Amino acid sequence: MRDYNKEKAMAGPRPVVLSGPSGAGKSTLLKNLLKEYEGVFGFSVSHTTRSPRPGEENGKDYHYVTREYMQASIDKGEFIESAVFSGNMYGTSKASVQAVKDKNLICILDIDMQGVRAVKTTDLNPIYISIQPPSMNILEKRLRDRNTESEESLQKRLDAAQVDMEISKEPGIFDIVVVNDNLDDAYGKLKDALIEEIKKVQKNNLS
Ligand SMILES: Nc1ncnc2c1ncn2[C@@H]1O[C@H](COP(=O)(O)OP(=O)(O)OP(=O)(O)O)[C@@H](O)[C@H]1O
Ligand SMILES: Nc1nc2c(ncn2[C@@H]2O[C@H](COP(=O)(O)O)[C@@H](O)[C@H]2O)c(=O)[nH]1
Image (cartoon, rainbow, N blue to C red; front, side, top):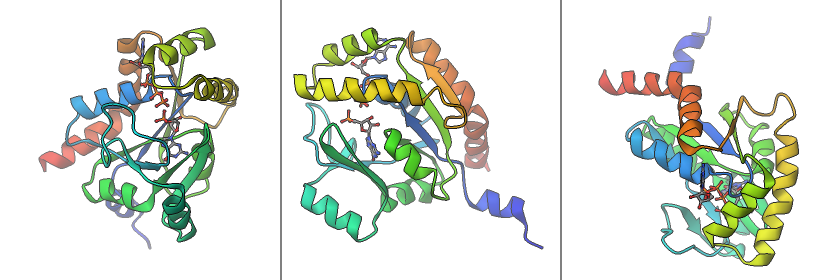
């Protein structure tokens, strides 16, 4: 008879998918998690064809690549999922997820809704968390204040956000939806959702 408990333990901690509209606060929240729980979480560094923003580092925030390189890698089957968002390609490589899993850390994927749908067809079995803004107006203000997007990119992101906010209400897609109004409250809710998985890794780190 197969030992399912042993197989589950060997599979390591469950990954976490953070999704939600651009500007909802995913990166802010996940950076808090990575800082507070060093040695517990690891970030799946995606590939993208967009240019780095000031302060972003190649290999840390993203792997910045050309469209040709990314398409060739996708064609070779090196990606778990990929999507076009706001005119740029984004994708999660098998190697990025494996690098985190090899360290027995909880792998966090920050991906859009297309990515969520694609991951659902794989055997990754993550906890799906949607980060939502309190309103479209607040989202637009946060995105504008971030000062990272051209007007064209901003409009594309707001259009995608409207669709995202509707889909996130559908039952069964996300395990939890966190509305990021007050940052501390949202971070508290995110930690509550992950505490069981966090404790497992901390216990494992001690043994
Ligand atoms: N609760 C909050 N209250 C006010 N500002 C916030 C809050 N959460 C995040 N922000 C700010 O909103 C902006 C967007 O946040 P962030 O970059 O984390 O969003 P994101 O979901 O990761 O976006 P993207 O998908 O485009 O990477 C940032 O400037 C961030 O500092
Ligand atoms: N499907 C995927 N979506 C991804 C991935 N990495 C990031 N993203 C999403 O793209 C948008 C825009 O990100 P930005 O850094 O340009 O603001 C955002 O919603 C991310 O969640 C990925 O590998 N796959």
